[in-house]
Image (cartoon, rainbow, N blue to C red; front, side, top):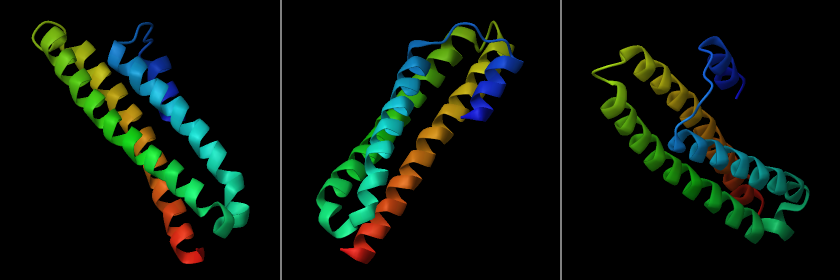
Length: 120
């Protein structure tokens, strides 16, 4: 997340595409889901069903973010690829950062699932 903020500051980005905003909303939602899951790990056996629901949700969110990522890159290439290559490169980097954040939440979901499998 910090790398994304640093890139935004470095490139002085002041406006964001709808796809970037959608991906950022997924990041916020994924953080909320993860925050809900963490205390449930205190009693994995009792909370295994809910933990599984939350991790499934995180995996679905990551898949949705992948679709948004692809659509955003496509839009950016069409809008800026031939006329403003620098803007395209900056947007591509921001998309890459956002994608990495969502991927990290999926990694957390996979770790939680592993804990649930080990302890349930």
